[in-house]
Image (spheres, one colour):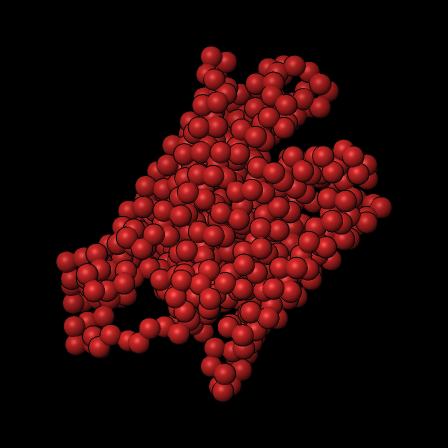
Length: 517
């Protein structure tokens, strides 16, 4: 019998309807204002993530900071790791309202700092402040979902989060390129904070009504776990050192790489659920799967535009549009997992999703062969994004299903840490392998304006994609271990794969983000 399934002698009469489910779904009268507010916040985060990446090269060139270009990305990820842990602790102690408000303020402040920067180090500092805010926001939103939406509604709100990325993924790069060309790159950064005001004004009052305060309003306050805060600092610093070492392939870089690993390993073991990297059944495997899925896919996707530009001669705009189909199929996969009738088959959907991701990543390097049409990569990536929609939404559902209310913040932070840390580690590993096999020559040839195929190093791309496909296949195996270990009293089927009785609502467990910014 699954740990999620009650014993026969524990079954009580049907409970009264959850007061959080006011009817009409996530846009019903009881949830409409809250849903619109938090979905709008996700939409703007998604727009920022897609728009800022387009303006970043121009900003680095004008600030004479090409040498620090990579740190504009790594600064965001490293500080977001600390923000995630702090947000989980803060939300469990006092509710999600304060970390969400502070996170959005920090996110906007970071954008303003970067947009007004007159030197590259100030630009990187702004990205670090922005990343801290992003880490606070994403975990706080998970806690809002766990408190304000009943179990049957969570897949739908997570599907709405995924759908919020569709328009930004298509429009964001084009809008950012137009603004950068006609108004300047600074307005890409300075314009977004003004857009945050309206969704913030809508969301915060609704969150205050439905999800603010501690889990037990009359009980003693939950203290901050200082050990976890120290571990969060260690994981952020360790990730930063590891990225620095991977970006500078010299013998001297071994020292920061070793120091980063020494900080990172104990911090990860202390912040993630016990047994995560042993793929123990239940919550540890859910957290591990999130990292394997996000890390393998995002690390591979980061090299797709570069491969199309340098090896097939496409323009950067067309290379970006080749991934646009993925936004639609990702939202489609998330919508599929949100349907109540799919709840009994959630684990099977997740296994299928990881297989689709692995196939897409393995198929991507086929475009290195001149006779293979470029559109085949767009099709393959759409299939991979469908798989990601099935997996990412479902890991969020399962995490909140397996988390007691007082641990929703801490466990949501663990899920996001697994996601972000896998991005950092696999991007660092993929980048190092790419550079070691001549990837630097690929980038140099493109910078000098040489034609496609000049200084071609197809092996540098293959050595990135194929290992990531293997990581995704490991994720398919981990997806078979999401059901908690069975009780001594066996049952023919797990609750995660058992169809609900006709008179029961299906048991449904719980983003760019994110993709994330």
